[in-house]
Image (cartoon, rainbow, N blue to C red):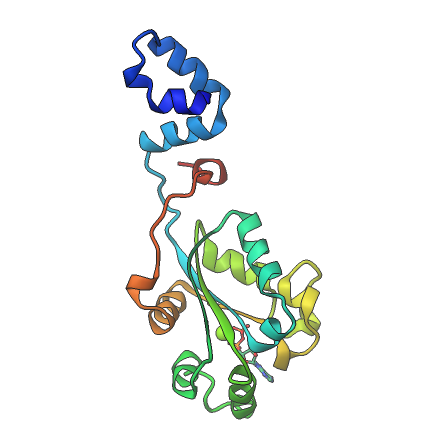
Length: 194
Ligand code: IDP
Ligand code: MG
């Protein structure tokens, strides 16, 4: 009710500017919207590609993985489920095509659907590599996705881009620009310095 009164404030002549300030001070959501319109948040636009691999999808880990990125404060700007083609994989893993495990990697990655996501936020590339953990789950600390949900390097549940350049290349490979959504997150000024 009070929020509605704030929205229609210009129409309510008895309300003074002081009254407005008092209401804004009491309601964090209103405060944030007010603050956001007066400020620009710098340096939070970095993006990375995170993909839940077929073993993660089959084991119903998608929600838990998304939750970790949301809880950290990152913003989801793209999401899709797809059956990955060998063509896409050969581009995605272009540096690995000569590795002895490449054909089994292709079998693994095409064994079922993948959930691909683009996450945005301050230092998201590096931070998400830390959250995901080392390539080999045997070396991954507890608390990381791979350390909590996987055992073997051939079934390590999730992909995360490993550099800014890699992230940009992979996002362009997996998503069309029109499928990425620009939106303002209400808590942006609480999770990052403006
Ligand atoms: P990353 O996923 O941590 O970036 P990369 O070295 O880029 O690791 O390798 C890509 C993927 O290839 C790994 O996530 C894993 O699925 C697979 N892979 C890497 N090394 C091996 C291996 O020695 N045996 C089987 N699969 C491997
Ligand atoms: Mg890699």
